Length: 78
Image (tube, rainbow, N blue to C red; front, side, top):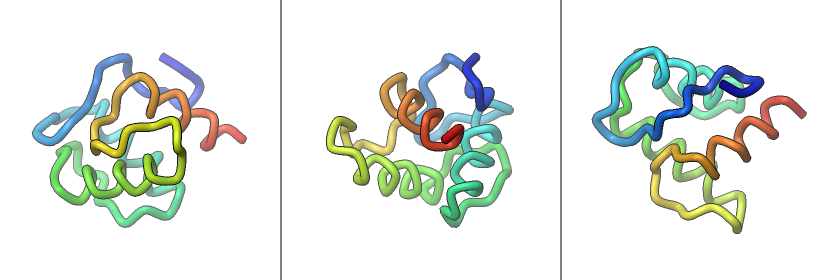
């Protein structure tokens, strides 16, 4: 766990559960248009990709892995 409460698992299209809800809450806090439903669908993937595009060190793949998680955690806790 880190300060925003993201789980340690990698999340991607098709992932489900509380870890996805936490990610979606973080995206919503940053004004991305996602529904907090615990389902990593196309809208969540698009929001993650748009977030990744803001940071050159991240791969724009729509996968919420360790690097994206660390950057997002810093942004949310700034």
